[in-house]
Length: 243
Image 1 (cartoon, helix red, strand yellow):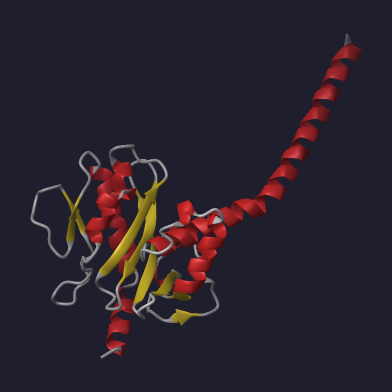
Image 2 (image 1 turned 135 degrees about the vertical axis):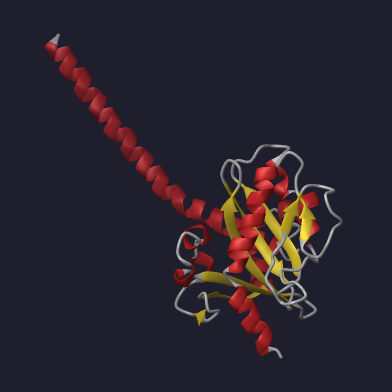
């Protein structure tokens, strides 16, 4: 009996080691593909915020299509500090906005992506990250050249409720932001308020929230104010440099 127990123990231990080794090899082999998928998804969202790469789902080689569109339309990317000063020692694409927002404002590295359309129009794209009801909400906000008017937004989430908070990634919700303003008539940064549907007439600084998704809507509102508010000095500096 003792020999049988020893055999079972040794056999089980050997199997654990073998399975662990196989899983480690598989993870190592798959990691480059996983990282590529994450990179492509990020580039696609950046492009979608300025209404590009709209045929990605129809393409046989989706990755190649996204890479081509990104190279064509994203003409610059860089990181700024809280004073709006450009930092060329940090790769904007690799910055984790979620981690940056946990830091004091003075320590944040803030990414900027610049898109140029075929007609020469430029758009500035900013990644945003916040918290909804059940988990993270995130996305990209594209501003027109005045760094005030929203050209487009892309939002997504990890675990919001289907039919309620999860509606933040629908065109019906996202399209409301187009043409909205971040600064009021006095030049004060006010961001975008997300209000109860039908509560007040649409204005330059508000959109309708999601029925039944109040907390998620509030999370998106806070995300926009907190993250885009980190760039307010940069926005003002850019405007002043054009005067």
